[in-house]
Image (cartoon, rainbow, N blue to C red; front, side, top):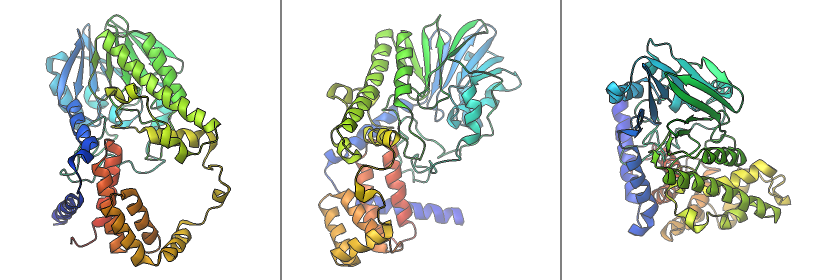
Amino acid sequence: MQGLARRTSALAVAMFLASCVSAATQDYAGREKLRAQSNEFRKDVIRVTDGVYVAVGYSASNVILIEGDGGSIVVDTSTDPVAARAIRTAFGDLLRTPVRAIIYTHSHPDHTGGARVFAGSDRPEIYSHQRLVDAVPDIGRAGRDGGDQFGMALPDSLYINAGVQMEFGRVTPPTREGYLPPTRTFSGDQLSVAVAGVRVQLLHTPGETMDAISVWLPDKRVLMTGDDFLRAFPNISPIRGARLRSPEDWIASLEKLIALGPESVVPSHTRPVIGGAAARAALTAYHDGIRSILDQTLEGMKQGERPDELVRHVKLPPLLAENPYLQEFYGGVEWTVRGIYADRVGWFDGNATNLFPLPQKERAAKLVGLIGGPDQVLARGRDALAAGEFEWAAELADYVLANDSANAGGKRIKAQALIELGERQINAIARNYYLSSAMFLLRDLPTP
């Protein structure tokens, strides 16, 4: 009965959320682009070149198979044992036993959660950078719960995707049950090995994580980039509370990868790029996009600009803004700008008023009083909704909710504002967070 009640509640919330949206079709252009991005995650085993295959769409992350003499190498292992078993089945006879080696491109659980399935009883060597060993125990210990950014509680009717993956944790909850610790690590810039007759170079390429490695097959000219290159703007400044991912390190890593001159690039999310010219163009655009946002932000900071001023003009140049590998499905330009600012100069924006700001509740109470009381604030919130000023509507509702967290009118206005904002998003993380927050506001209220 409890499960039925949850499903009924989710359905009621979904119906209310759907009823809130009221705009011209063109307002949803970003959402439609995000829907089209789901094509990147259709289930497929793709042949990259002789002896190299990638399984896309079976898990939150891709699994790459390298055939060797009398055995196989597996790069990244999917989110969990359930997904790993499905991928192993999908590979079929392409996966030559025994599995001689498993390579982790980095420590995130969607890349390391299915290792036990691929290892079986073969006892493969498991490779990673030494930094991965240090990172794994700390996963999930700091920052906010990332479930809302992945839409893990959203009903299917409201969910589209997670930007660079179809879903993470919505069907099978994340688990460390399939993780196996590395048996061979390296601490320097690279490690060259031969496994099952295949020459493999492991390159330390910090970007999305500091333990990140890229896998280079010099004889096949195939490059596996982990999460340092995706078909989406990179998530340099995560909203879930993680630290800024160094754009300088990311840029340097991409320069190293471009210099290899790969004929094929296989990321651990989204589909591979095949062909030398296409691979170089994609990697170069990714590099130039990050470089441009970093340079513009630092230049603006030199002029004394604060975050709210910076985000008004720091944008990708027009050609890069149109590039398919820099669409903001996952990371965001504005979030990156704010993250760089905070990383360089800290929380203080230079305005003396903000040295010791009023507590949120006290500030909200004073503003509500100036506007004429809660009813007047909520009336102005409804006016803002009608005018399409959704950020302002949500902020007005927050002033009331700061001192009356159970206020039903405030919850409904804020929820409707967040729904309207979410439905206009190209960014999956923003969409999922907006809609999840709206759902939590509404779940205990009677549906009008």
